[in-house]
Length: 61
Image (cartoon, rainbow, N blue to C red; front, side):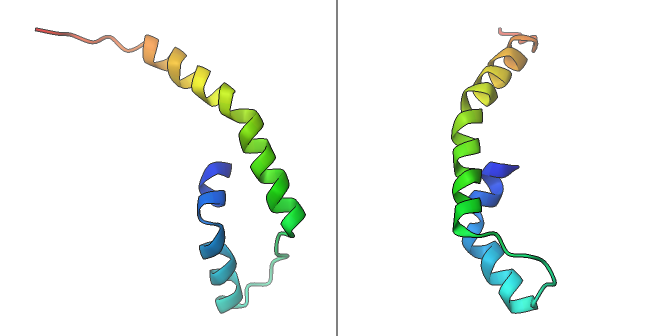
């Protein structure tokens, strides 16, 4: 989810500005923290995907 919001950062900022949403906008420092969190969590995502793939039974001809 964090990865998706970072990929859509410009769209999120633009949309919030256009609709004048009553929410606090993230500062650049907060965006940087999100990026760091994604970088730190990336290995865990890779391991989770790998372990999950091991549990699928595949059949070949």
